[in-house]
Image (cartoon, rainbow, N blue to C red):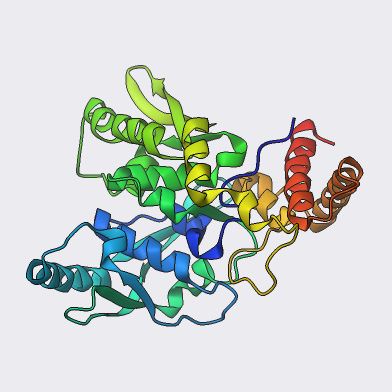
Length: 329
């Protein structure tokens, strides 16, 4: 039985966040409100453009703050911090050894006009390869789900797990987990890290997100070395989101994609590659990828002879590519 369509496939482009996997794995120390502003602006991008324009986000979309004078002072401080925030991206060689790290400023400009209730900002050009014209190895999720989460650690874990949703599993060393969430100096005892970060995120995702996780801790003797996250679709929340207007089929009722849409295109090959680990990506040459796609597309068309919907065919092609890859055919 094919996987059900993910909520972000076919959703309105303005509700979908698209980030490169490198950016998802990048280390940062954004506060919750800073994360919300950042992600809300990412969702608004025209991802087919080559450069960034000025983005605007109403504060009411990301914060419950209502007192104008307090809000003005708070936004003044937040925009100061946003201009200083850095995302650190690390590269590894084929043996998994770190060979490089690069640190990027996220925003080149921030502004707020008193009484407007709107924060405006512009991404630095260094962010372009991580946010614009994404073709492979990127992660999609709904901004509406992200904004439900209150803990900044829940949102970071959510992004990491959405990156590997298609594989249903994500293993990360404890050291890498701490580094990615900027927890090197916090919760030195693993029991505290588990209680204050992992368990809190597990509870919050189960209540509010389209996916949730169970996990196991891999130990060397008594020393925790890695965390194995097992990713599950959260059917009650998915149904709730659909009933509230996030149904991916709603936009595709006419059986076609919106021409000229600024959102991420449904590209089965790109979505398939985005789900793979770096090691697996290196195993897939272009010829093998094309053959896998061709055979999956042919099967999708055979299974759906009466459909005129490219979205249905592409979603099914993507699911078949995953299944064939797993079977080794």
